[in-house]
Length: 218
Image (tube, rainbow, N blue to C red; front, side, top):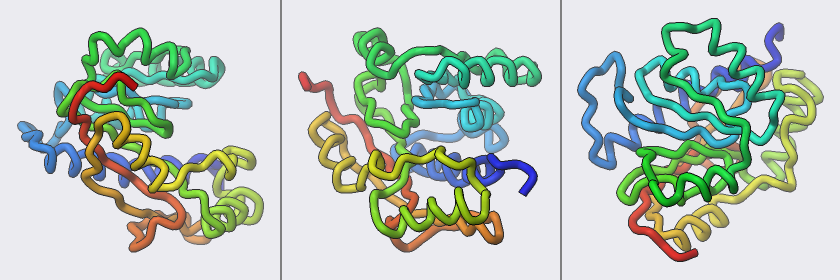
């Protein structure tokens, strides 16, 4: 496979469709089908090199991408310069999620948080949190080993299995922060064909949508 990040880029279509479907189910009305996220303010926690952030900006979302890895933010900033049509819709910040949350929590201005970690304080009550991550199961471990070390479809070492979080753990955390789980869907990746598809189980990759109901003191 020529592009080691190709699998992650292909995953974008699933993440974005899940996000759009979740917002619609939460009452968001799309005004323009070509730009379904027009005027939606999104913060992408752990944005990396900006693969998802740029895709969201292309459908008119206003995106703030944050990451604690300075080199990744530099990559993201350099790449967005090559895409002038969306450069004004994306703002990348080198920071930790804890610092960003403390800074933004008083305003809670964002409509949506897309994250690989739990971060609730920076989203408005009544708005959406989307999480896309990997379950901590034997199946996911085998899948990561195959993708990274056998087929080479994902860069080696990009995942740390013991840091994965189960759907049950995520739901408990979000409920403690006053959030209501709306939907959870599983996906699976076939490294031999380099294709993603929806899955009937949550044993490997999963996407979760929750609505922030109220502010909490936690």
